[in-house]
Length: 424
Image (cartoon, rainbow, N blue to C red; front, side):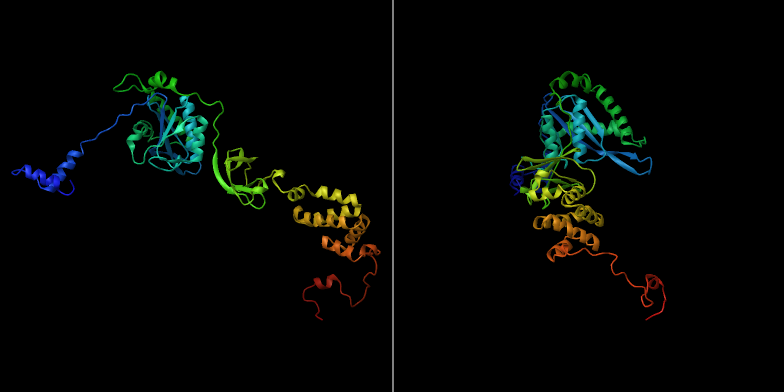
């Protein structure tokens, strides 16, 4: 007892050789330390696969730059047979782990009912003794293979004793045996790892009959579930807000969503080839994934009618519309588009001229375009000024009328091009 009751009781019962409280507690804790009660957990064939990373990593040298980096060792162990899977990964990211699990099941040629990971961040976003929160990508991967995920308790290594032993075996018989070799590529290193992995699985047990491979073939493999018909494709999940342009951003590219979702947050389900937008758990859009920066994937039906109408126009179509009014208006529109640095800069000007064509007769608009071409006007504002002031009804100006007279007091451009000329 912490209040000293146990020690006092012991002293009272042993008057001659009894211990004081401090000595009693020290010896009691030493005795208590030998009480290591362990529950032996029976493993059912095909029920669980334990996954974890080894503590040590494999050294790999870049053959071009000479840079040294270290590849983590991913280990998976089946519960009933201790059949081992080991692979070096480029990193410990979510994508690498999910794809490693998929290759592990392909190696087993079957799927276990449960995946038991350590509380690795790539699988568990929030650890809990009772209800841990899994990452969406890892959970989606498990759903694809039709198995559940049961993370171990935090700081409870006995919950995953199988993989702890498997990691120890992999580090001792794989990484330790390769420590003096130099690898220049991940594929080269994995070829050596796979060779050692197969050797471990074929190696006879010390205290049991057979090997990991024989027990797996006899007991575990028949109990595994079949692999799904469709291959696994890594899928990542993220969230983004639909902007005022009806697009959500992912990886510097933009994907359209229905305009009714502007300002709202949607979930993006992304693979290497597709981007799917979901709102309230329902799919609202699907696009082929863009790879680059500033690229757009737009479905016209997602935009408001006014936006769709704007996107339907292009320089060729605008010029063709202008020619339906008259050849001079078609030529003016072409000149407007040429004078702009980007075609979209001329769209608004042309749309403004189209608006004038709805107000004024086609003959006046064509005449105004003729006058605008002569005076070099290239804006909707100039066209509006010509029509409002009835300048289109006047005779068009002649570029050769009233030429500048030749006179000694009229200096030409050559004069102003000289540096240090006479000053007025």
